[in-house]
Image (cartoon, rainbow, N blue to C red; front, top):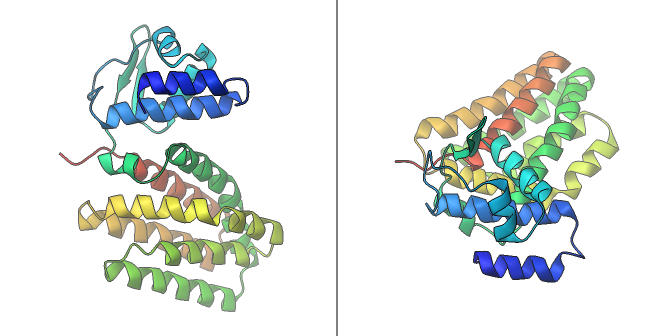
Amino acid sequence: MSDGELGDFLDDEDDALPQAKLSDLVYERIFEQIVLGAYPINARLPSEIELADRFKVSRPVVREALARLRDDQIIVSRQGSGSFVMRRPASSTIGFGPIGSIADIQRCFEFREAIEGYAAALAAERRSRADAEALSVRLEELKTAVHAGHLGAKADFSFHLAVSEVARNRFLLTSLRSVETHVVFGIRLARSLSLERPRERITEVQVEHEVIYNAIAKGDGDAAGKAMVEHLRKARLRVFEGAQS
């Protein structure tokens, strides 16, 4: 979608779409331009005023989109100078799904940090020996899938789902199940990109799951919650990680 097409789309839909949706579109358009090299690493992005005019949206919409790009460590702001490209995500990210997909991945990870971090802490406090053994089985299934060279998205989600089951709170479990499609999509993208990296990256992801499991098995709720949140934050950033040179 060109800048002109995006502008026409926003003109047609501006009255119907909330600001958050507009910022998603602006976020993805800038994201796409960075990925395609229109703005190389260390390049300065146009000002908020210029971007607002280009996309025919308000400055607050642009400001929100830029803030999220900073959260994803794709751009960095320098006081008095503007926003600069910090890294260039892999080109495969923009071909993985329709417009809205990348923005949805970020939002879903934010949701998961809140829900799954708490679920992991509760799981550590409420787990039984049988629960720990069941989690161990899920962890081993994930390890087997990864070592076989598979993406392991379903095994990954099964482990996270099992953690929520051990938390023994049906609302947490239902919440995670309700976003299964988005979660699995994000896992597949993150893992498909990781497969393009050195083997150490896949091992790093597995170790993160093991840290979560060990904290739960030991009954350390604080450590389990922190390990889960840290894992999800790293997983989100891996999606937006710079392309290999």
